[in-house]
Image 1 (spheres, helix red, strand yellow):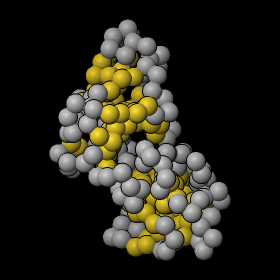
Image 2 (spheres, chains in turn cyan, orange):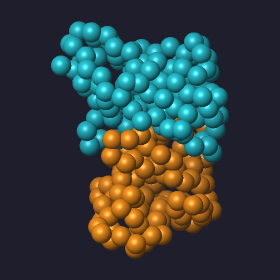
Image 3 (spheres, helix red, strand yellow):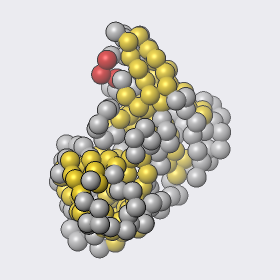
Image 4 (cartoon, chains in turn cyan, yellow):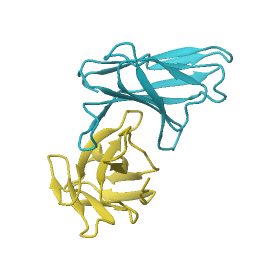
Length: 114
Length: 112
């Protein structure tokens, strides 16, 4: 973290509801990413954005939507179309587009469908 | 994308060195080797990365085989705080998205 804020830390959602997870950064980094992590598993990429007003689907984008209206913000909406949304969601940022740089992760949002 | 293979888990004693292996036999010339670790209920944190030469930083060392088909993350003196899942990741210079692709990682357990 250290400049990446994810909120809320815990979120409960009823089935059929949309819910939006917040990711804000003050690192002035261009690239932002959303990952999903299921228990005992690695992270899977949902969406990523390299620049304002542009974003790309990752490996598991179905049932999710994003926006990138500001450089510092990349909210993720979990829609009712996402069949199994209960998971740990992580936002990451990276300074540039090269692979010779490190990514910084937020502390995550744990979403539970009740 | 080139993939990595890591042991599911490893154990170490506190204050002893730890060598975490990673195999990446299909690595390409443009792949950087990155290591991240994830403590329980937290987001991953960057540890180290390299291309061809061995690398050292305040957290760890990265030893890369001459043929680049394997690498080893070295924690010189394990502490209880080093207990985490360690991910070895290849990042392709030509990958437009520059995203990190995570595998299962190695769960390191440190015994006092």
